[in-house]
Amino acid sequence: MVIEYVGQNIRQVIADMREKRYEEEGIGSSYMFRVDHDTIIDATKCGNFARFINHSCNPNCYAKIITVESQKKIVIYSRQAINVNEEITYDYKFPIEDVKIPCLCGAENCRGTLN
Image (cartoon, rainbow, N blue to C red; front, side):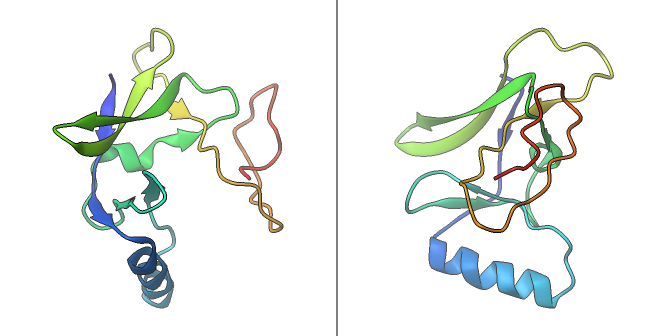
């Protein structure tokens, strides 16, 4: 285990409203991670360092949803030993959409987009 992705648990309707509000406030990025169909963790304003972990098409970590005392949590686990000063990355696995988000991970096997 590397770190838990923490923030506020919110519903989709709230996530949509917050995303719009964050754009209006000039917040460049929102840090929302879907747990399941009903729940999203919003780490934009009250998260930890996990929200800053970058995507890679060849990651050294992976995200896993676990249940602790009937509450779902997102935990980042390592796939391999991680050296000091090595960047921690995981595959965001964004859903496929018409508007593509370019991937800049630089991996040999880079897919070219995050979605």
